[in-house]
Image (cartoon, rainbow, N blue to C red; front, top):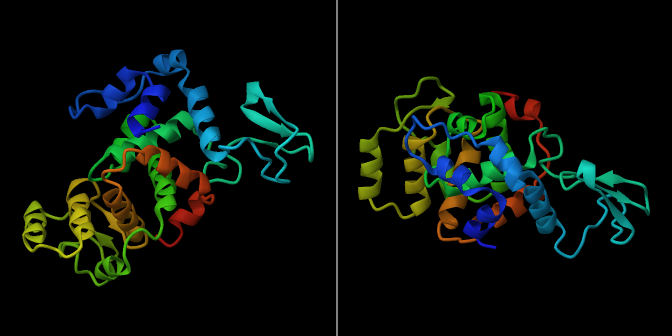
Amino acid sequence: MTTEEAVSRLFPAPVLEKIKQEDTAVDPRPDKEALAAFGSAEKCRAYLEELRWPEGVRCPRCDADKGISRVERRGQFDCNSCGYQFSVRVGTVLQDSQLPLWKWVLAVFTMAESEEGISANRLKQVLGVSYKTAWYLSHRIRSSMKNEAPNDVHAAVEDDRMVPDDRVHADTFGHLPSSRVAESEEAAHPNMVRTALQRSLSGSYYHLSAKHLPAYVDEVAYRHKNRDNAYLLRDMLLRLIGAESMSYTELVAGT
């Protein structure tokens, strides 16, 4: 399914319309009653299961593909071969998360749809969660986009050639003025990813720590490469399912 087809199947139209609203006065948080009535939670879980096991559910522990029974009320499976109970979250970046799967899918869709990236503060508003939760969630989604940017782009960032001079702290990159963005575009950059990064720095991401900047660079590169991908939601979710778990302690260490 294309992204448009998938989200139409997973979420009610009013929820999607609110997310796309540019008016900041409009509360973007989805209507939980509408989601429940539409069955979004169950549909998102089923979609992730379909993506992870396109040829049928397999036990993550013993790899059995027969004798797998569903524990419907818990959204889990039971392996008759080894007795292991598991869900689509097991062994993925989703494993230790308490967030409903529909919030994960909606977060991925929101990040996929944004041309310049989405801040944790905006994601907080869209999902109706705390800033800490939104920040942690967005970084776990970015972890599935590792190694997307060319080495020369990472090198340019590390050399401080693509960040503004007006930094607040030595290890923090500040806001890139729009005039600097225009200059970078007029200079006919040999790598369009660099221009996309400049736009993201000026639009959505203001204060980035040196530790996490490479993750933002990879995200920008991934979005730029897939800007015409009609199946971007599917592809991002597939990468997410294949990404390893990341603890909050690990993420904030050294920042």
